[in-house]
Length: 316
Image: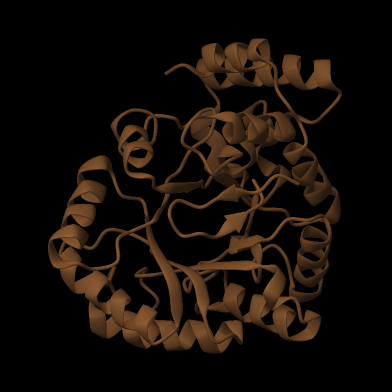
C-alpha cells in the first residue's frame, strides 16, 4: 500500500485514517477491538481520536474513545504499528475551549494515561482559542516535544487567517509549527478547505487529514429523504444535505459507483484521496461490513472522467 508523508513530520501513513469518535458511543469496546484489529491487518495505520470523545453520549464524561484505544493497544501489542493522533482543547469539563499551557500540560497526561502509551505521535489543537496567544500554546507543545511526550503537533478547524497567524508565530518565536491541519471536507462540504486554506497548506507543506469524509453518513447514499433519517442515531444531523445539490451529488455517486461496482462511500472517499492537498481522509465505521467498504476505497482509482463528474456535481 502506497503511504503518504504527513507534511514535514516524517510520519508516513496509509491514505485512510480511522475515526475514533465512534468508540464508546456507537461502537462498544468489543466491537471497537474487532474494528481496530481489522483496520491494522488491512495495512492501514493511523487512528484519530480526541480527549473529548465521546462526551456527548448519555452516561459518558469524555475520554471513552482514548480509553478503548488504550485497552486495545495493551491487549493487541500493536502500538508500533499505528500512528496515534489525538486532540486537546475541547470542553471536557472546564467549561470552555482551552489551549492554555496549564490545560494542555494537564490534559496530555490524562490522554497518555488513557491511551496507555508514553508518546502521542500527533497532538492537535482541536479548536481555535482566541483567548490564548499562539506563542503560548506552541510553547507548551515545545515543552511536550522536548520531554518526549508528543512527537508532532497540528491543529483542527482553523481558517486560512488563523493558520497563517499560527505559522507566523512559530517562525517568529522559533517554536514548533502546526505540521498538520484537520479541516472538514467532503463532496458536499468543500468551502472550508478549497481555496485560500488549501493554497496555504500546499504552499507551506502542511499535511491535511480531513474529517466528515462521508458528510455524517449522507454520502453513503442511505439518506435520500426525510423518511430515511431514522436509519441511524446520526440521521437527524444530515437533514441539511437533503436538497437539490445533495441529490445531484448522490446521483453522481450512484453513476460512478455503478460503473466501478463499488459503494457510494468508497467513491466519496476515493474522491477526497485524489484531491490536491489532501494527505488522507478520516472515516468511521461501527461494523466490520462498513469497515470493509472503507478499506476498499484505498485501492479504488477514479478516472479523470469520474473526477470531473463528481467535481461538477458537487460544485458549490
